Length: 318
Ligand code: T3D
Image (cartoon, rainbow, N blue to C red; front, side, top):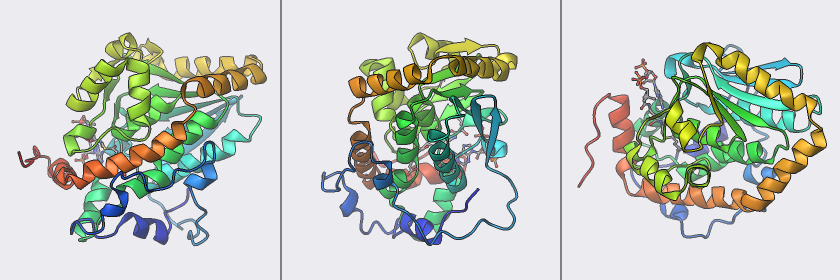
């Protein structure tokens, strides 16, 4: 697993708390959108990325192969698999490799412990902000979750989210970008973004209304209501619900079936559905990042993040 480059961390941070310099990401449409299907354009090479850390206390993303199924496991259970740089970069690297590996016929994303993922690690953001700096949220999205969502949609193999527990924030966004979702009966889904003054990102502003319909999507986005697996099934956010104890085996069986279906049929079906319904998805991710920046410019996000870290209710200006 690679550590974030110094330039990445520095790019993320630039006068956050002082409120300086937000204007170049205010959703004015001036930031050029990358060409459709040009993943490289979304993630410029970072030649200054330092070598692998000598010692890491945990491996935040685990990878396993069984037959044609590649399983990627988020592995920060004590933090409900909140996404840090290592998970985001590891996921991008693993998805890129899987795209061109003919032996991989399906990809499963899952979480260790009681969560799929609680979304962006807010403690990381809080620590960065506490240093008096500013977080370029649009830039962060373009380097992390937008790439993940774009890759998940672009890879012409089934990508399946196995929802073992809570899926929140951009953790839910990643699940919604997947082709299929299998949920344990005790899984819970919540957008969570509105609680910290943000909008659904990582493609969720597109995938959520696509799957659940506009009215229910707005309701879920505005209220951050937590829904259970059966309600998620009812509104089309998951494909199937299984007993919690069976989730792992059921997901693997579900994924294994794709190794027996014509790879061309699988690939071109996904291409066709992508072209029919999401021809401008990557362009939308870029616009969504601008809109997220505009929401952050509203100023509530730091209070939202601080309130979460301090385990209290946020006090937003009315
Ligand atoms: O540029 C960008 O990336 C911006 C994009 C942002 C995208 C986002 O994802 S925004 C939304 C981020 N996620 C959330 O707002 C969810 C935050 N978490 C929660 O609301 C709750 O933890 C849950 C509802 C998910 C679960 O509640 P509960 O009571 O079952 O567990 P807990 O006690 O709150 O959490 C357990 C531990 O995980 C706890 O750590 P501790 O105190 O035991 O050391 C908690 O702080 C930690 N944790 C949970 N979520 C996060 C987290 N730590 C960092 N970041 C988290 N998102």
